[in-house]
Amino acid sequence: MPRRVSILGSTGSIGNSALEVIRRYPDKLAVHTLSTHSDIAQLTQQVEEFSPAHVAIMDAEAAKEFTQQHPACTVHVGIEGLCALAQLDTDIVLCGVVGAVGLRPILTALEHGNQVALANKEPMVMAGELIMSTARKHDVQVLPVDSEHNAIFQCLNGHDASGVYKIHLTASGGPFYKQPRETLANVAPEQAANHPTWNMGEKISIDSATLMNKGLEIIEAMWLFDVPLEKIQVVIHPQSIIHSLVEFTDGSILAHLGVTDMTLPIQYALTWPERVDEPMARLDLTTMKDITFDAPDFAQFPCLSLALEAAHKGGTAGAALNAANEIAVEAYRNHEIPFLAIPEIVQTVLNDAAIVKATSLAVILQADTEARAAAKHAIATLNMS
Ligand code: MG
Image (tube, rainbow, N blue to C red; front, top):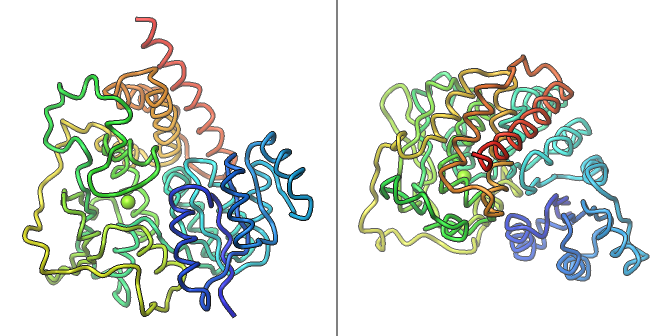
């Protein structure tokens, strides 16, 4: 029987890549449920192709319209709708939604014993400890889909964590690598979202331009692999061929190489621990004439330092960092603030946030709500001055 996959966020970039993978391996994988924020035109096409048992739609208006058009389809609405999909008996829940919204569905999936393939990093930044302890409690695996973490997961396979000396998290450097900071004052969201090597959704592409994405990934790696912050190092690798490396105590370094295509980590996570025979594409080593590494420039990309600061603070600092960044990126995408104001907003929120221990979901969601309000206030203040 093919493995049943529930896709949270099937109309986004990750969702579409996942459907490509499922189409390619029909004997191994099958769509169980689908969901969208509000793109019901695309969801309709997907429903016609895959006939899922259930769908969820975040936006209530869109859900109403879709239900009228598809009376035979079971439609769940809003965040509760995503949680309803997550708790159905299934083989794997792929979380490909963007931002904090994925947190409750991820926890719900784990609590119901469903394996989670995680492409949605923000919940790990907010609540990594809670997510991983929930997974352990219910004896289910969180399989990383983020390319770097998928690479690290593969490099660590069969190795004892105590033997890890360092995790080298690779970063392409984004579209503004080596560009003087002062030239970034007026970059438009369209330029920032134009990633040099990866084709991704808009929010993550902008996070890659500020390097906040790499900062979030440091925190994600800490929780996923249970390694201290000091052992995680960012290395710039502009070609995005090596997806990360693990250095062991004896000096050996294992790397994961692959094509720059999200179908590779998605396919690995969905079929784990099996490997498929015929991938979408293979890497031709002879075409690679230069593979280079560089140290990240913290002065040019302050978001990296902000993420480290949040990781050091611990507790609800991750939730505050993430919420402030989500609000700042949204404001930037709406042309309400300039590119360079993104780290300023996050810094202000992080400085003022009351950081407490992240003991429960309620505490974390409270920190998230407060940080969103603080970020909106900081943006208004910035625009008044
Ligand atoms: Mg990544």
